[in-house]
Length: 208
Image (cartoon, rainbow, N blue to C red; front, top):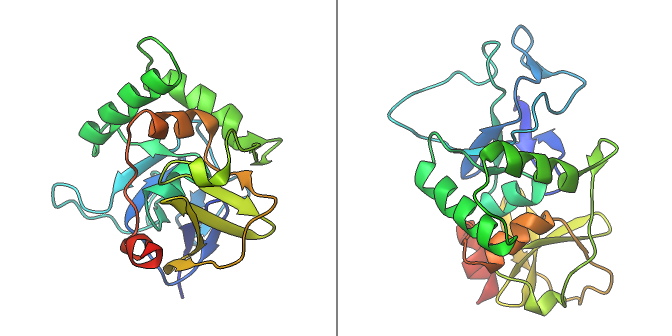
């Protein structure tokens, strides 16, 4: 029976056999005795994205009162949900993200805490996922941006929208007429400024 620890682009956490390319956390939000989530979905504004393998360390998922292991299809999914790269296990990526975030948001040197404060405002609306108006036509969004229409999430790559699922991405023939931006605006500006999110291999196959 899979644990409830897989994150959707809208930030929901559900149970599915699919694991994904990245792990990460929002603090301690589970009960280790039952390996089930608590009622809260975050305990810190530092929502991070981590490597699934690092220095050969192994963790038993949800086995102790430490950070709650969450899993994401890819980095675009994690970004859409409101996470950022971890400065510990992904230090190089985190530094590149911060540099692009500073450039894209026309900010001076910012701390991880400062970025988290902005992201926290952008990802939540009274405890629920905040959606944003598109700042440009969908076809002009950078690769790795994610949008929402109805109950479906889409990755934008090469100007096309690919339908998201826990298994990967699929082509989507129908045009989107009312998409809303899932990726926090400050993260979107970091992507525009040069940060390239890691995409699931199916994104390339589906965009051919």
